Each structure stands twice: as structure tokens, then as C-alpha cells.
Image 1 (tube, rainbow, N blue to C red):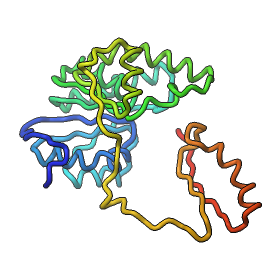
Image 2 (image 1 turned 180 degrees about the vertical axis):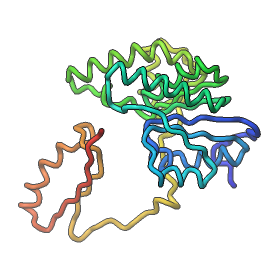
Image 3 (image 1 turned 90 degrees about the vertical axis):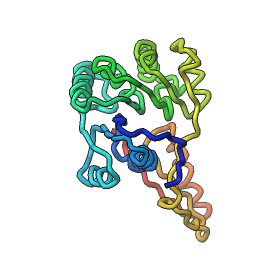
Image 4 (image 1 turned 180 degrees about the horizontal axis):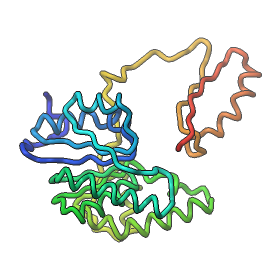
Length: 247
């Protein structure tokens, strides 16, 4: 297998990938998991919402799946404490050498849990900062941003390495949390395997507007309001939209 990630041999190493969505591991981290396993590492994938199909797909490539409790967009303190103890209980059983936490809640509670358990190497990956850092002037977003920065200030220093996919995100978090720049790393954005997500010829006749997104303002869903007018003026134009509510 070609070494896409430049990973050295990791015989005997046990690694935890902690995230808030199992499908994300399959769509965007599958090749990384394969590469880690190829180098000799034991990979444990922790997510809160596994289906049997997702467990089967990850198990087929050699990963070990574990479930933990997490309410992705909740702000209930009792639920957050339950998430923390669920993560502690799960990773204590695994007794891994290294942790990679992806997205805000897994980063916050995963880093704290790994400190309690005594994982040797701890890292965090920000693929983005989330809607709380979007300048939309909503009170809820402002409150959430204040809470997140407060928690990041406490728990990000626990990480040995903090990874970003955007230099502006890196700058904002580094400045807001007073991080040591030597701890940060900027990598390329998340991609997909083009052998599995192959190119398809676009619809050209009729001209088609396609949007696949979560039902969020930040994803551009307000632009949909202009499409009915476009379709009325240009009857040959059609639109397709696949939207889902972010739970």
C-alpha cells in the first residue's frame, strides 16, 4: 500500500479516534484508518451514533468500534457530565497510547478524559470552528462562543498537538486561548477518495441548480428563495435540493 500520510511503523501502538459522527469516519477518515492499521497500529473508533451498517464497514477494514454517550448540539450540563464519564469509562477499558479527538465536544471532553485516564499522547483536530464562531450577531451564538473559548482555554493546553485545516481558525483559537504556537499544526482540508467518489458529468440540459447541505443559514439555504423566481423566468431551469435538519 502506498504510504499517503508518511506514517512510520507503529507496531503495538493503540490509537483512539474520537468524533461526534460515525459516518464522518467512513467518508473522510477511512483511508487514514487503513493506513494506521497497515503500519501496525490498533485503531479504536469512538462515536455516539453507530448503526450496524457503519460498525460493519469499519470492522471490515480492521477498526474496533465503541459507542459513547453524546448529545451533539445540546447545552444541558447534566448531559455534558454524562458524556464526560461515558468517554472516561470507554477509553479506560481500551487503555490506548494515543488519542485524536475531532470536533468541539469530543475535543473538550476527550482531552479531559484522556488526562484522567493517563493517555500518553493527546491531539485535537479542528476541521472548522462551527456556527458559534460565525459572525451572525445572534445571542445564542455569542453565548456559545464565550463558553467554548472558556473551555478551550482550560482543556486545549492538555493536548500535545492541536491540528487545524484553516490558518484563520488556527490564528483565532491560538489568540483567543493563548496557545503556544509550537503546539499547533495546519494541514490540508478534508478530502475524499476519488476512486470511491468518482466524477460524474453534470446536468447541462436542462440547466440544474443542486444544493446538498444541512438546513443552516451558513450553508447558503437563503439563496433557495431566489430559485423559484429564476425557474418562473426561465422555465427550462430546474432545481434539486437535498437538505436535512442538523440534530
